[in-house]
Image (cartoon, rainbow, N blue to C red; front, side, top):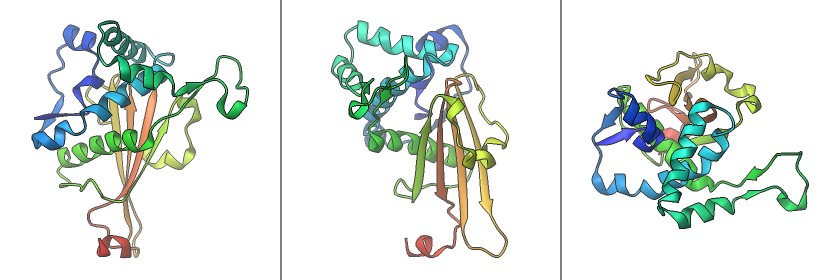
Length: 211
């Protein structure tokens, strides 16, 4: 069984203090599931420092990562992620107290789309192939949201523990057109958004029919 999103998204201190009994779990092939573990850890180590200044739950999540490092766990990964922060991108000076975080988009996108695939199945929408055509965008802090995602942001919230992980879904279609797009908004620790757009399984556009 695999958690959607990964259980590591729910900070250990919160799991021990609260009865998080309604986490989504789905059957998963063991080899497929384990192939994501290092990318999920990279995502956690990369995003929690961005979340920490934005919200209480973000700070708790980041404290969990720091605790792991203090215990000598995944120290190599910690140094790798630390090197991805810079206050002089390309030699440019950023505004005071600002830094830039380089993120391995292949690894981060893979983790985010895995969550979407799990939620897609959880909603009874069927198995969404990993290679399904899709777009992922990460946004943090939240004051930098782009209005192009407004259609999904106005949808109903579906998260059971929204301060830790919340999500929304909307199907975009237009009568007379074959294209059907699903939009997802994933909110981590009330501070970092991941947006995903992908062609619906029932999409009848030329690209989908050829796939």
